[in-house]
Image 1 (cartoon, rainbow, N blue to C red):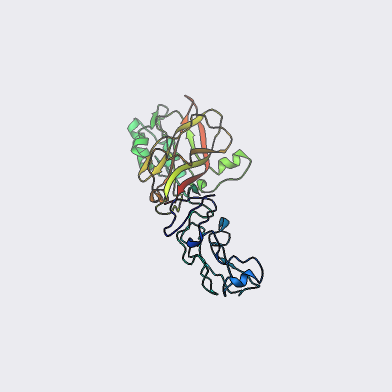
Image 2 (cartoon, rainbow, N blue to C red; image 1 turned 45 degrees about the horizontal axis):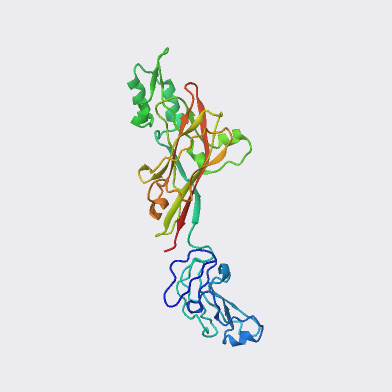
Length: 341
């Protein structure tokens, strides 16, 4: 428990727990008369009989006043002091009469919830591929049957279908009868990212997940998840960021993280927080970052609240042949912050 000794200036450093100040600030000691004796002490509290324990333990009385209905005027004690958010307390002005102490509260110190180590958790409301903007059935799948005589034929068809030039450069023209294109692989079905699939059956969760076919290809597509819709207060200090990604592979030891980066503004920023261990075939929330991890970047509340804030996940295929699938069912972000100013 932290204690602010308030004289004439507000306490500006106390940051947590159930915090009490002195009577002159209207926080902690009883503002007005603390009347617990029915009839006796309540009458001495003034015409209103205010039992104002402004900013008291855990802010139970929201900084205000409890009126003793018997022994004093039941209309007394409507005080608004000791706001639970640690704000200014106007403690103890009862509707039945002037309080005996703490008439004008200074800034409340801390509050029931404190002012440090606060956090918000939100889920991603948008998802997309970094390399392809078209639809799977309408635009991407037909690329596999596109005829070609050179690599340029496949790259051009890929760009027309919605692929980025950088990703489409990894297309192949397969020598066959006839020759056909083999495009790079991308993430698809982003509407499935918006809700978490609750089922013990992995096949059901796979059906409710975004997915990418994993092959040994120079291009590795990023899953971009953003628009978390945070509401971090202006002026807060960001302490750490973490992402929980509910992920799985269709086979053990075939897929790992190539990179996991935070998104801000135009693209990835800061440090790579990808893990070295392979993905499992069991869906589970993999945690990246933490409450004291800023990912090697500077963050403002405005940057975190922006729709562009998010995470970029790039998986890596660990085999030299064949293919596998990576799945992501749901992504949440947690931002830890401090409003102690």
